[in-house]
Image (cartoon, rainbow, N blue to C red):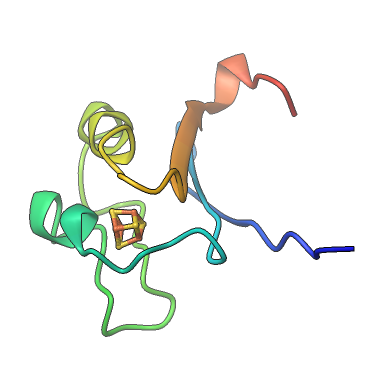
Length: 78
Ligand code: SF4
């Protein structure tokens, strides 16, 4: 059985979900929103580094599906 270890980071309004086992380290997220995605830091995701709209738009561009996000007030598919 494969262990899924999803990491979640929230700014109180939106939550960023990161699945490390899917991440291809292409750094598209870091180039798109360098204030949020800082691969050299731990933790590397800083949910306060951009607006919620920018975060939701950027996670949708992750090519591997490692990143996703949702608005906390409309939490879907748990
Ligand atoms: S864009 Fe997606 S696959 Fe690329 S580094 Fe970011 S999280 Fe990983």
